Length: 466
Ligand SMILES: Cc1cc2nc3c(=O)[nH]c(=O)nc-3n(C[C@H](O)[C@H](O)[C@H](O)COP(=O)(O)OP(=O)(O)OC[C@H]3O[C@@H](n4cnc5c(N)ncnc54)[C@H](O)[C@@H]3O)c2cc1C
View (cartoon, protein in one colour):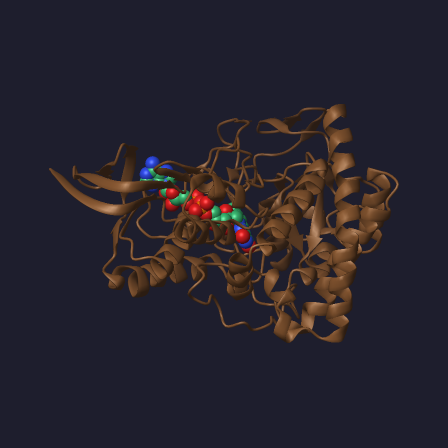
């Protein structure tokens, strides 16, 4: 069976990026759009997430630009207390489903093909039937390039002997009887979520061992808050970040100062992290994580056997009744940078680090508002995912350069100040600033050029050394 139809745009992937892109295109153009996805529901990897997953950033600047996510309330209980709400995975998926069912489809301009595999050249094959569809489009938009993987659909990258209890975090809530202990594999945010979930369910920290191949620099979520009551705090951090960078005498000294001022956090004061992947935590979460004393820093796991675990640099014991939680899937894979706009093909990537939905919406606006490809690519300089310490430096420079460029374009500046998904530009909105905020803005503006000079120097030195 085959069908053929035409559409202005063919968007491959109904994950958060495909949805955020489509939303802006629908709002700002008259285009028709076909969206294809393997999943049965929009929301991409959020459909496969562990049940206790939540956004790592406030809901208020996640999702699609045209529709609010959550109710802008602050948590009153738990380890995010006092800060703006973080949507759960279920909320995120429900939200995207509502966007599709209540906005996209009723517009009459969107055709949605769930449970469908895109095979290239406009060819789509149904997964539950032998339906083939040819979509003839002016442009194809690849929203799958970032290649997000999550543990439930990604087998561990190490060997696991038969009989070992090795599960993705999705299966943690299924544990019905206390095991010998828990071993968390991975040093990223999923591992942090799993540790915190165990602790919140009364597991004794002594029962948790945590394999951390690389410690990471983390961001304090208190400094990534949208409400006006946080504006001074957030702007102060931005000013201090730029001033510390500008006045620093070496890379290490700068990171020490950033930790002192609370711009960056780390698990253990005695360990200098080597990884940076935009992980956010609260001080309360960090206090909890520090209760886990058995942190194994001996490299990556190579093999989990019934009674022993081989790591890069050591061997440790385990038991058949230990629950090993695999948190090693790469949600933030480093992909080679591609031009975003190439004739009739768009490849969605991040233009502000770790802000996928903002980036997709911004790219759609540029697609709608600008004509020539060179200008569009110039406005959408990719800021690829960070991974190590030097990437904090790189992304700080690249984010700042993009911001300076965007704010130099009056149309873009106006768009950003209204964009729900831009959690940062709105803070600088002219109408609402207090004198204190004005002073902070002046500090940011004054320190930024010197900071960028210093950071670029560290970047060059670091790249030469690697
Ligand atoms: C635990 C966790 C928490 C996170 N928290 C935040 C946060 O707080 N804030 C934030 O900004 N980001 C967060 N992220 C990052 C998150 O990955 C992005 O926000 C966003 O969800 C990525 O969406 P995506 O569309 O790029 O990818 P995906 O969700 O992977 O969507 C891609 C879609 O493409 C489909 N697809 C792929 N190939 C094909 C094909 N050939 N044919 C048909 N369909 C195809 C897939 O089925 C999938 O549905 C988090 C990530 C994780 C893992």
